Length: 104
Image 1 (tube, rainbow, N blue to C red):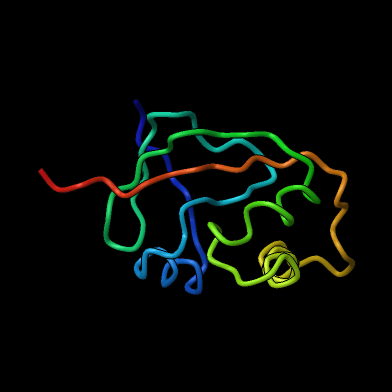
Image 2: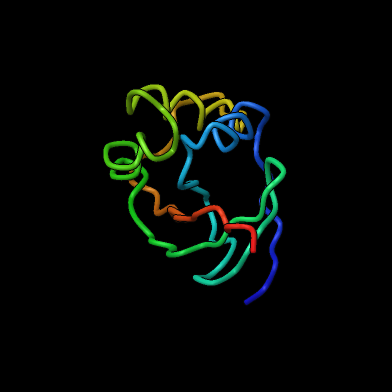
């Protein structure tokens, strides 16, 4: 188990604090199951990292990413990566699933 660094936008930090974000989709793998990271004042543990086409990530994990629609997640992705054009939805991305560690 390794503590890794995962950066989140202010919008995503708030979703973490509210308990609405349980996954993050990244262009590269940032950790492995069992790794931890600190964000939004808490420690989180990665439970799985799954490679999928970006189109599939938008369609299937938008809710646990903290969004209301796939389009909302796609717009956030475009802002986060400062893309001038829509992303390549066939590209393989990595969905990192995680949970908040309980104090104890």
